[in-house]
Length: 122
View 1 (cartoon, one colour):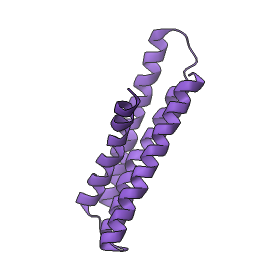
View 2 (cartoon, helix red, strand yellow):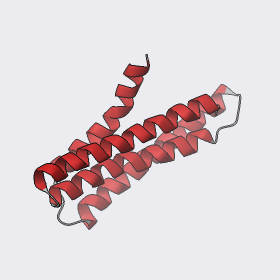
View 3 (cartoon, helix red, strand yellow):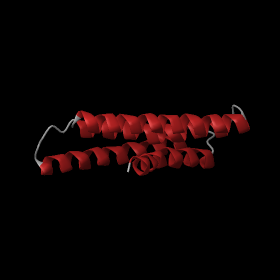
């Protein structure tokens, strides 16, 4: 993967990390150190870690063949979805208590930052 694309991907990951921190700090400001704040942080982490995996996995494609590049991105996306599912499953079965609304709010906000970055870039 070219240096330009990788740099853009890292910018998006940094933006996602910043959104996670801002939303979590917002919950901390409103609710203090509570289940809501913890859940908000977990929601951001559930969005951020699979995105990091996607960037890492897709950046390993060194082929010039478009088919191989597409396969690499499909593999990266499949892994990202699997990691996301496992992390959501673990959050709701292994972490107790958990607040669904802050978790999903931060998750959606973190993922939305990718689309906002694309809109701002164009």
